[in-house]
Image (tube, rainbow, N blue to C red; front, side, top):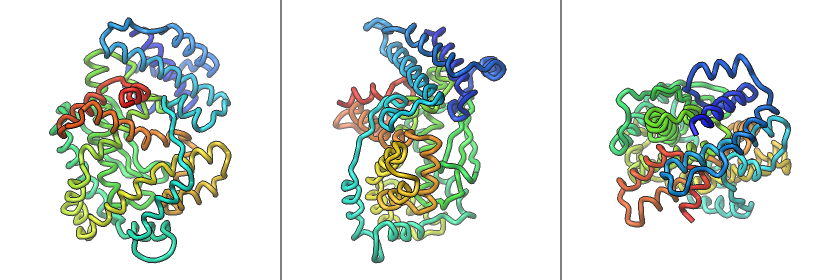
Length: 409
């Protein structure tokens, strides 16, 4: 399988010559990257080679092979079929939102009706101050909790330190792991982790839009501890360095790996900061650092818990927009009404749809799938340490979304 893994990595690097977003991280042999850059191959040949490699992998190891070996084979095979689908898309194939999600991310996203979101929005009617439509009232309410620009770094650094301390209680991290934070503008995302290898990341935070107080913990955990940074560190330590599985030294963004990565990063927020603990920490630490009234923390997070139930509204906007059922203006209107986004944030989200398409499902579908899997593995009477053990094992393993889904059905 090592020979097949090398071919897979080289094909992924080749796709990256056609799609600058495809290779999210690479820290394998430098010579392979230089080869891809100096001798690029066409999309048709990439598809042909990837199809042949998937066929060559065949049915995989015997049923009595160690689970980790069977998981590796399934992972490599499914990553290849996702690569083939992405190459077809680059070559002009037009997939529906659901077909694309299945092909690239190994999961079928749920469908929700407009009535479903309308009912959820209505539940906020009595929770928000003011009168008038709920979306406008929510935007006005949330704007009271924007972190002033001059306080953003102090708030983020405190959130990062707390996330690391809480994570390190349960997951042994390499002593030399690290990351740096950069503040950027004009990006279609709110935060991004660029993993560089050698247990090091660069995390970028987009300050082009307002930074609300809840985003500090969200981004510190999602991008850092115990999210993307920890996920990549554990893959490098346990699969690349200890086992020599070089296919994990590359992260193709449009692949099943992203659902595990984004889902575990989002679930990691709740792992590090269970709701009551989060409210207490923010009230006593982050709200004062941001110059915001800590007395309003509990109310703010009660509202945020209700708003979180609307997260799938963004998926539905993307589905309708990418399927050509609505145009960009209608998608912005949907996001404002049912995802309760401010106009500028809704416009930014459309640029995310344009660039990353069905990738949006990885955040919420992934989170729900990872959470269900961790709860099942930990057991019905699990203590926090049991959940952390299950969570850490997932981060260090080559599991696929479909594998997680079968495990919780």
